[in-house]
Length: 360
Ligand SMILES: C[S@@+](CC[C@H](N)C(=O)[O-])C[C@H]1O[C@@H](n2cnc3c(N)ncnc32)[C@H](O)[C@@H]1O
Image 1 (spheres, rainbow, N blue to C red):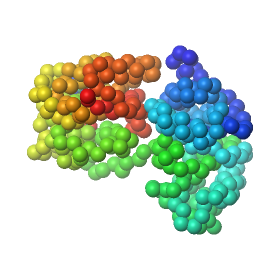
Image 2 (tube, helix red, strand yellow):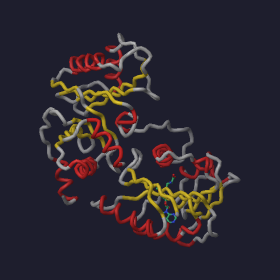
Image 3 (tube, rainbow, N blue to C red):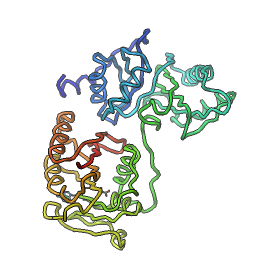
Image 4 (cartoon, helix red, strand yellow):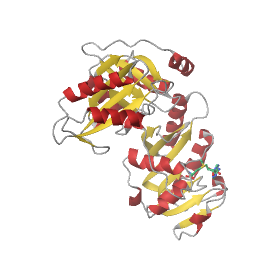
């Protein structure tokens, strides 16, 4: 299927019937406008995929032709780029009264074996924009009230189980799963960080999320180069983690960073910069720039990264064929001795994805 057809497909609403033996039902979430690509990732794994849109261009109800456990295994193993979050649907009820639907979902959750004494359960409640007047957090409070009789302990992190509920204007869907089976243990894969006072840019969240998603410990690195560093969100995080940072950008870094003894600021276009060999063990690049030129620029500076060093790079998805573009960029980096470990559209990525690579 061409990527143009993919986008059209995203507009189609099919009726997803209840799963039969050997089938499974999931609510799948991608970043806004990227659901069609998440669906394509599923199609490449499972062949035909029946889906309907629950929330415009980001949340799909998907029926797969394999069992739930099998689907979870295959999806996790495939490390999808655009599919951000999955939640199994084991209970489904149609109706328009949110209170009644929530009560039915609560009965389903109570009847499940996981609600025993001392078991840590995270309740994750989401809704489509057209579902009732209450916010997701109000619905979650209602649900918690309805589940009070259970002896489970309700938590927001480090849960043994996640009970997921999704409400639309005409139905409710619920399922119980292990946190590691949802691709992300955040509700809908929406990774929320608290904005700090004096935070220099929202871009900082991207690097924080990359650190978490790729299982990195930034404080374990010694010396980083940040290409396209201004105003300085990524640089500030690296400095906080105790690294020496060389920040390159013709634009101004925030003045609060300039007094850091661990910062070297090169106020130039990165194409005019030369490094010594193996100066850095971490290279990060977050330029909002044409991917082709970004690849050229990063490849030209790679001698500065020591073998075994890590590169974290955002790729701007400039035109309408992200799958083809990502493939091209990965192939170019692999020609430059960068081995791609993961490619992921992070929650904090907008029209872009993030690559985690290691130089060999
Ligand atoms: C999205 S901003 C980076 C935000 C940064 N990561 C942060 O956390 O604050 C992109 C930056 O890339 C810089 N940039 C674009 N082309 C560049 C080039 N050829 N060399 C160096 N910097 C460049 C821009 O000046 C801009 O400041």
